[in-house]
Length: 117
Image (cartoon, rainbow, N blue to C red):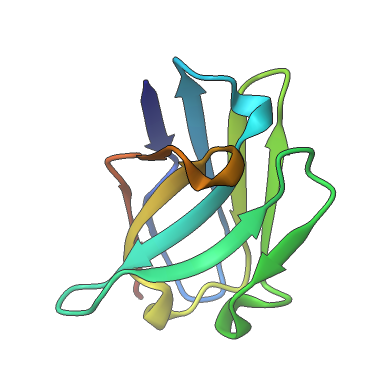
């Protein structure tokens, strides 16, 4: 089982990034996917979640209207489109996969997003 995030970078405030989470080794289309982030010295924070079929999404208040979570089950990949980035969005972003009834949970290693001028 693998979750591999990519797309993190250094970006100026107001900029955009798209993170990807490529999955392998499990039935991706059966798993809900989430993005979390962890800033230096802070606890890991949940950011967004998408249902297994992509029909339902939910976001933490601080990113609503700026971030969009999506998935392509044919490519076994989840995405996080991040617009209007702020310095407080700086963190390591991790994707998480949770299987039916929460029986199994997988994490990626993370990708660094830095928002700074």
